[in-house]
Amino acid sequence: MDFRTPELDKLAAETVPQAYFELSAEDARDRYFADTRMLDGKQLAHNRFRTNPRTLVDHLLDQLALTGNERWLDLGCGNGFIAEQIRPHLPQGQVVGLDIAPGVLDAARQRLAGVATPCDWIEGSADDLSMFSDNVFDRVTAIYMMHYVPDIAACFREVRRVLATGGRFVVTTDRPDSMVEMFGVHFAAMKQMDAPAHLFKATPKARISLDNGREQLAPYFATVELVTWQDQLRFTAVGPFLDFYAAHNYCCAASRPGDGLEPGFFTELRERAGEYVQQAIDRDGYFAVTKFTGSFVCQ
Image (cartoon, rainbow, N blue to C red; front, side, top):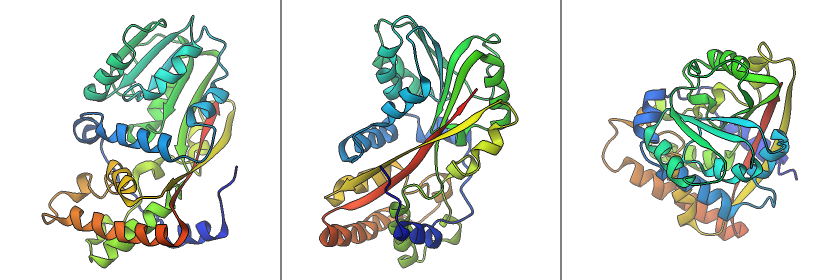
């Protein structure tokens, strides 16, 4: 399934900035993931509006190649949404979830309470795995979270240390132009509002993307294979898209960089973006948000 078109490539070239926001791990812990609302909104939208019959979890299971007895460390486990779906594939294994944010970690703990597979939930940063012995995990994952890690290189060194011989490290991230349609309406609306110049940046995922991830991983792993995965969300009503947009902190503009803006800024931004989306729905029957994503499988 390939959603890439010359029109999307042109939109990306015209829309996605080279500069990107740099958000701290502390803000991730204390602001964005103090509770599960942002994660819940994204996960709900990806399930309800996807057009690829194969889910992200299907993609991950292919890359993990589980036999059922592996010890699995999920870095940045969040609310346990993915762990809950992978857990049945480890009936004789072990799940260890690590996250810097106690709010979402509590949600994961509650979500998987009482399941058959032993689960441990640990608060900590992915660049310090000193609580684990060498060669202890058969699988390690970092799913859409590596851009929040303060020291990415230190994380990779630590994963190499705790990964057992023959194990796999799966790093899932996006291309810089993933969800370009959302960026298109976002920046168009901000231009209408004459928004501050410092808000015209890409998201922090550009820190480690499908474009630059291999070169960052290669010093630590003998093989780094990229396996791509695509999806296209199609919204036939404006409201659900705007909820999705808000769950992404208005393309990060409502994160720390948005502090100090006039009251009502994001209300107006939401309304203006919604007008562009409604035009697309009236013209095409839906507004598309195309996901160009994938995983690096490291051994």
